[in-house]
Image (cartoon, rainbow, N blue to C red):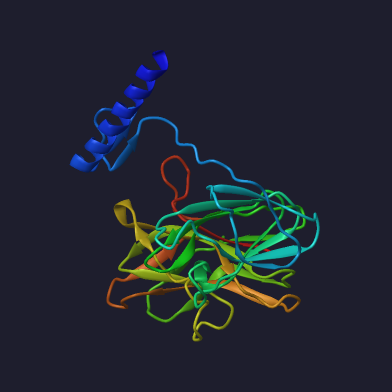
Length: 299
């Protein structure tokens, strides 16, 4: 008799939730006043599926099994490299499905950018393969029904002892007041890559009047910069600016020396338009500078 009443209450609760969701299109879990379609007052758990055992090859349209989960551990040999070119979906109507892959090996994991393939393929940032080397690297993918592809939602890059890291800081006072692209003094690194892509970060903050743009380049100022790296300086209080490009993947030729530099220009070279970066001169009352710049490369 006790079981009967328990089941009856469960069915009544399920019916109530379905009725409410159809009536107001909002469901609350742990709250009686949901503010969105699904409002959870508490933790959200996304279950982990069986491990994916991947050998050292390119794996095309990986099957996640008949019951798909939101997180998978990647196992297999502990040396070499492997690539992932596509992930199966729950079904053809899936929109927003999320899958996180965690590499538990010491191998390099490459997520293949494939914008022209079937609906199981992956689109990566900057239209290039995403290479994640080292143990416990991970990538989170989300499916877009509109694009008919997986997209990279986020990734974690493992910086092992084998990674080379180069950083330079600009220490001189510099300024720019015209529209021509120009190298920023001190933000240039010449090295020989050991892997591709490399990951580049630049960060600058200072003062400006007018609008200014920044970009990465591996050539002279009058030639096009590295695609998709151009940024507009964001204004902050009292005429100051900040611009940052974090961990951007750049394809290079392994073994060939290359120079990566940061360039800038003023959008409109009218009277009074100027951007400054003076790390040695302008300090606030506490002796902290409002100006600075640096370039970092991880190979």
